[in-house]
Length: 333
Image 1 (spheres, rainbow, N blue to C red):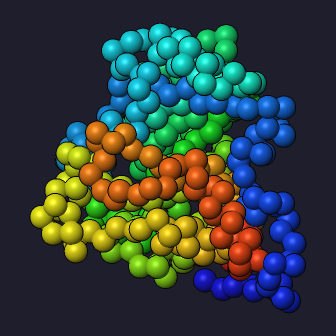
Image 2: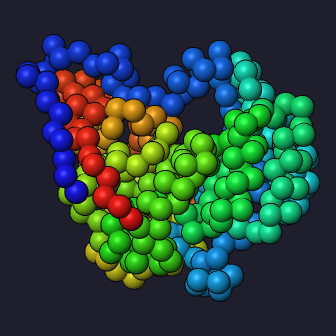
């Protein structure tokens, strides 16, 4: 891969001016508010899909870090219909975020493009038929995106906001193999490029701190993702959820699954963001697991504190998103 190096600020320090204001990074929330005139909130849906890494198509047991219960909102009841789930979510979210301008149905649990097209169409169109839903966010794996499905999503995107969230998780093949991901980074690269060719807005999902990752490999991931047609990025720290294989490994031997501390994570985030393309929107910077499900690490840092802590660290350095970004000529995959 060849790089054309962008010039860095001549003097890094407090006097250096961030193009993103006080945040010092390209915030998805700010972009959405400007685009829609206010807050846009996602309503989570569990549509009953599974995963090819669980049902035996490519593997069983799933990724060793995965327990969807750790990321499922308390209001969500998978036994309800899609319409009932949306109504329950709206009831909860409208009280918590009363100034929301628009709602998007978020197909969150497992791989939500993994199924027959007719079933997918039925689920998506049930959600879009709800009078308060203006679009879809669809979480899935990069190996669950057939041309047939992408063609259909391209048609939907002509009339609705369609955000395709692709679980990349790592740009390091050794880390992906270590957590039984079932695909390598090249599969993610190809899926992102194919989705973008269909005119879809792609959000990539990345976990920082997986076993086999190094500080340097994660920073290289920022450059690799920056070379792809990604609209937004969700980042979160590795957390060990009870009942997962990775949690069991850590209980048997903590040295086998090293975990990031609070300040180490903020420093890593700052290093990563400095090297990330300034065009990529940062949609999420961390995650918070219910205490009853989380095994480790135990931080005093709450989710809502991560964004201001990152901004403060970037301000301390006199840096911002993309200040160390190098534009890359993508290598063919």
